[in-house]
Length: 474
Ligand SMILES: [Zn+2]
Image 1 (cartoon, rainbow, N blue to C red):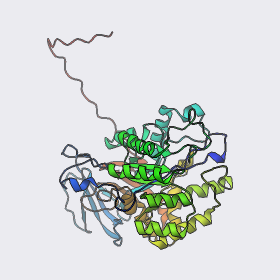
Image 2 (image 1 turned 120 degrees about the vertical axis):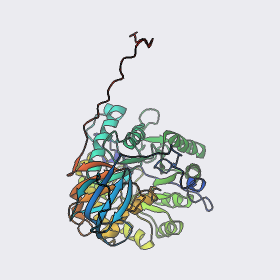
Image 3 (image 1 turned 90 degrees about the vertical axis):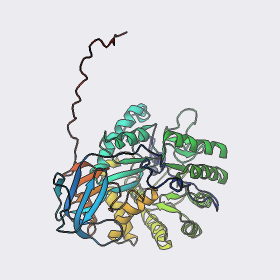
């Protein structure tokens, strides 16, 4: 969803999402894990960059004792204890076992439900609000502060990872880096960088490309530029590529081929026949519940194309504006019921479906309600509540290409964990009752509030005698 520009109207309510893929034989992103010894440590992202070996995360052991464990694997909920060492889930103990070090930090969660950290598979972390002045809308400083403010909202909902499918400037990349150092309270960020489309495409409709194109959009014309645009996002640090109609078949194929060679998946915001073209080209994830033919749905199922349907932002648009008007990238009729039907058809076809909220303007203030609403739509479309929660955790980790490290509570996985009062696996409204959130082994939310420990003072170096060093202000 693109941010509507203030006072211009609903026509600007656009959403940027698109993914692309290749023709048969080059269908999936190249997997660097095939070239890496499993013992080789890498970055905790789809880029899999070899990293300096050594301990990661905070020192010590955290024990979440006596909770109801929903582990995201499909296993029934059971009572037990989760033991976290540094940034890793070390073990899951049965009730009664006390096999942890004496110095461990013990948190009693008896009667509460412990789950894998939730994932939001469709965010725009730094889009401006409707009333934001135009000069602040494009301000990198303001965009960074917007992202930092918003990140806290997600974290307080138990969301420990976001798949950011289009943001301004270098904001999502810098935020990702600071989160990895635990220097700001936020979920892990998996950024796409700028959304790639062509002149007049989604998010750039009617805009003079020489003057006004938002920094969250990269316009590209022709296959060579689409390939170049992908390389630019990779160079900035992208964990995925996001593309959107309008495009030619050759353009989307070029983008997908380049992204897959670099090891990145492609997500795509497309409409009607462009969805078919995107799927044929090998796009990995189709965003949104926009209309598509049965032929396209069957092709998605055959090719293993995933989808993040994002029903909730469209529900807000229909409720708040009465329709989606004035957009040349939305030239079709749709409705809340029609969107739900697209979800039902995709589920019936066996397509892998993830949970994403696509919150733009000030909708992040509604959290956690949009996230819960999206899950409830999944239930309405035929998922059981545990299946919907698995979509929010395990399936979303697969969509991120991170299922070997995130998405379930299992020994060896990264310690992204959320604890809720009540039983979210029976009543989704209990997801609003967040108690504890742990991201990468750090206790970041306690009693439902972000924890920011007091800084640790660093003692300055002692004066050196006769060091010969001088410090002089110019
Ligand atoms: Zn979007």
